[in-house]
Length: 435
Ligand SMILES: NC(=O)C1=CN([C@@H]2O[C@H](COP(=O)(O)OP(=O)(O)OC[C@H]3O[C@@H](n4cnc5c(N)ncnc54)[C@H](O)[C@@H]3O)[C@@H](O)[C@H]2O)C=CC1
Ligand SMILES: O=C(O)[C@H]1O[C@H](OP(=O)(O)OP(=O)(O)OC[C@H]2O[C@@H](n3ccc(=O)[nH]c3=O)[C@H](O)[C@@H]2O)[C@H](O)[C@@H](O)[C@@H]1O
Image 1 (tube, rainbow, N blue to C red):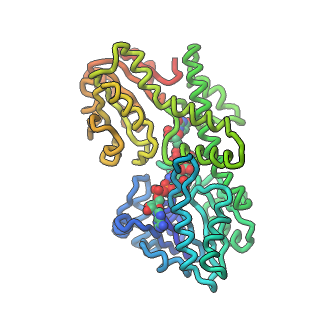
Image 2: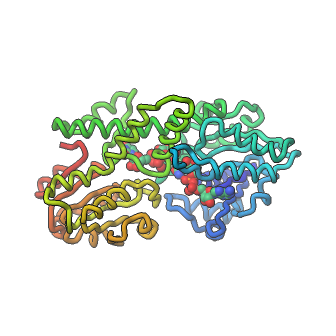
Image 3: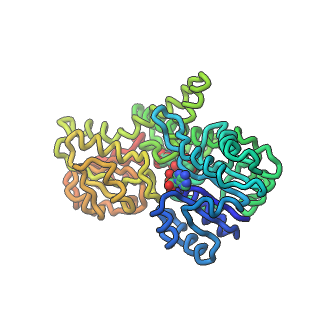
């Protein structure tokens, strides 16, 4: 099949190389000329395991091409995927301006004599497939087009693996020829029972409900962790104890500093805004957001407790800046809020991340010192705050830490360090809900 994918962020690029690798002819379009120039040379704008190799292979095999010119590729495509950003607007709702612009552009270039499936792969409010189709038809009333919703469920850090081994694929359309084409396109990726066909509106809601459920699960376990702390119970044992119930499942029960990234925060807010538009107060989702906002600042609260005379000139090593391991994405990363608060309190903050440093700098206060080597950040530190659980931190020898630090406070914001080993070595170890 011939595919055009609009937007070369995580979703557009990973989908593009994956469908190309499955034998389709793919053209990726982006308005960002610099990105396209780099991609043509095989240079990926994002860090994602397995992506570089797939990109190189499919450029070499001429199965994927990159362009800024939508009109050069869209008119004879069988499937066109919209994968542009849908950021959070000031009122919390999803800002659809990029999607609307693309829909208008499609209306101008799609012919009337070629049957095209247009897919919303971006995460968009309920009713967006209809809105995109309306915009296209306003420009070309005779366009032979069906606009469908096929939401994306990949996670950053395992995006390629998730694309090739999805739990399910949701195809949202009532148009049978479009459904047939999309099922055919996705068949190599999943068994037939994993391909779920729904209305476009249900598919759009499935995406928001999935992210909102996972975000709520995280806020739930963080709330339980905070109560564990108050009563001297241990959240690791509690998570294991409840996660073995198959109805609950052990996944997404890791207590810590809460969720960040480009999707959970904005998607939960967008769902709250969608509910509000229909006069429904989404109380549970509002609590999910509120718990998450407090949770990410826990290390600052703990440090104030440990150092009651204040954090002035305290050397704090912050380990990990990206919102999660395996990605260089800094969007809504807890590290940003933590570092701002620490600097505000007068701490001398030294931060490290194995992947993201330059991209992080503009988001952080000038007073923070960024280091290429973790050892430099840790040297003479009074306290360590582990924010992102990169493997390199989990493997760091405890004896080396003891030798380089001035103080002995370790705040394990992701509950990934061996608490007993640290305590035995004389560290003042603090995990989240770990007693
Ligand atoms: N990042 C992720 O892991 C996931 C993201 N999503 C959703 O997918 C959508 C895209 O997210 P990301 O890939 O992170 O986006 P992104 O924001 O990283 O990239 C979007 C790209 O679209 C391009 N673009 C914007 N307007 C354009 C236009 N008119 N023509 C051509 N290109 C245009 C931008 O230049 C940019 O390169 C969002 O709705 C997001 O919520 C869904 C699942 C996972
Ligand atoms: O819509 C999206 O963009 C994507 O959002 C998430 O993927 P992602 O944000 O890449 O990463 P996750 O692994 O879900 O982690 C999100 C955040 O939750 C945190 N988290 C995750 C799991 C957990 O148990 N505890 C926890 O605090 C992570 O540290 C991270 O900050 C979803 O998992 C994907 O299915 C979805 O496609």
